[in-house]
Length: 75
Image 1 (tube, rainbow, N blue to C red):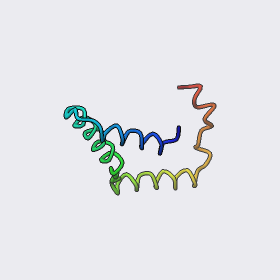
Image 2 (spheres, one colour; image 1 turned 30 degrees about the horizontal axis):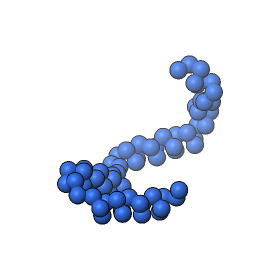
Image 3 (cartoon, rainbow, N blue to C red; image 1 turned 180 degrees about the vertical axis):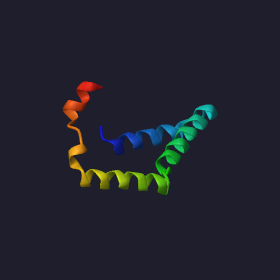
Image 4 (tube, one colour; image 1 turned 135 degrees about the horizontal axis):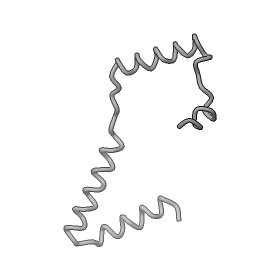
């Protein structure tokens, strides 16, 4: 069954529901999902600068980079 069909079934079940606590719980889950989807991460400028400095350093000295297979053996 595809997601649109599942949503339609859930909507019909909600229309017939009368349990206030269950409806409240479902609303809380929907509110949480909406807030989670809208969360925007604000990355501080200092962190962005640090990452760019590290990129620049590796471009200038690529020999400092480690091979992942070799590095993972030491972890």
